[in-house]
Image 1 (cartoon, rainbow, N blue to C red):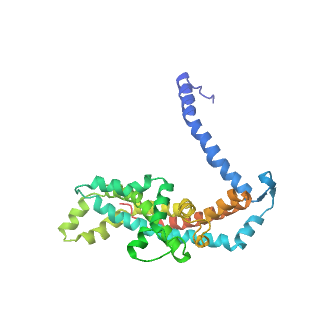
Image 2: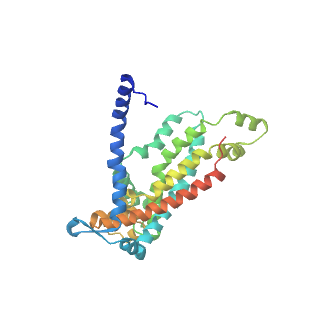
Image 3: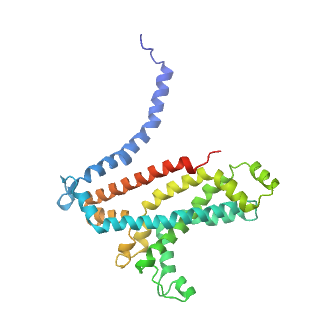
Length: 296
């Protein structure tokens, strides 16, 4: 069979299609695909003297990472942060979304106030919270009449950072929950009210199940976001603080070796360990989705 020739109009349309697609494809290749493959390659190499050249060392970087207590400790620190930020960030945001989804006076203003932390510069957020946590002059210690080392005590510092994470993400989660709530038909609530169901029963038997797709999306994205946290530890906890080893995330450790010390091969290995860990968590969550998420 002879191949049908494209008409001039079809060729022109194809050219314009490629013209619009090409910038995005180039951006993905340069900014996403190439760095991924380069990171995998560098994880098997040792950075040369003065950052020049790479020497292939096989699994030496991975062996060193797993043999170094700092790597496993930083991974555990990251998990602890996620255990604070994700559950509390989701639960508080859900409760706020339920209240702010109602037709109340000043609802728009409250939504804006709760969302403001998302648009604030991380450096500004860190400066404000460092002042609030200051052991001598901080607002919290003055109000509580205590002398707690919020960012210097190893037992407290990771919780302090987690609180900032919860405060920062509540507005984003809340907006997503409000969007999900507005998709739930009001007929379900009317039928429940006719049957005499209270507001709390409606919340647990209607709102929570029908909102499960939105909840799962938020939990999944926030788990990944929490496991890749860096800016809070970097800007809130001083490098000279004794609490840093018990607070620094695994991305913080990667930054320290790859950029501060110029050991990009070892830093790449740490990143690949984190990627593998996130992939395992994602697979587990995807399997749990079938049992926990209800699609109406």
